[in-house]
Length: 169
Image 1 (cartoon, rainbow, N blue to C red):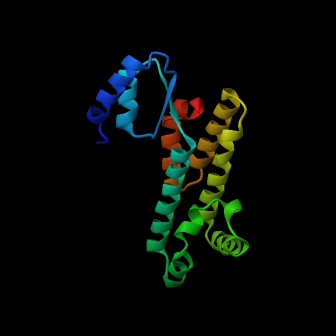
Image 2 (cartoon, helix red, strand yellow):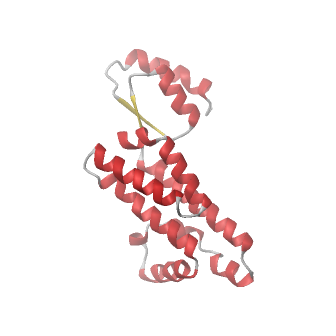
Image 3 (cartoon, one colour):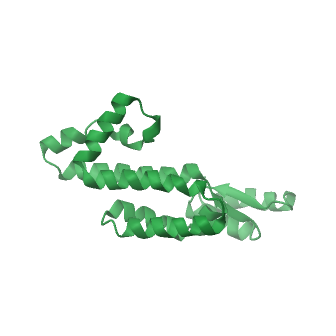
């Protein structure tokens, strides 16, 4: 199960056996967060990079779908078949796929902004300490909120709400 009541028995058992436990990594599911806080109040919660990047990728996909619904036939053709291209990290793409992504992002400013913000967010894990990461995250969230892109603002609000777990990473 994925609910608080489903995970609490495991966490209580872990609390009895893991007296030296300092941190626990989890996704940002509210039920998991609250279950850990209840069963292991002394343990730091850590949201890992995978789940953070999955969150922004979901935002990119939501934006792509919303744009696809609003665009004319030519615009829809531009977006069609490019879902996974938008979700890949730019540096991992082959040259021909980079060219396709460049053309797509040049033709669609909201997707360009969101894809650029995704690349910037990846820099969070390169910050050397808590204070530098905190300042970076605050600036990133502020920029995202001011972008005018509701999907990006939603990601920023989620990340701001779970700031401590991100910074614990």
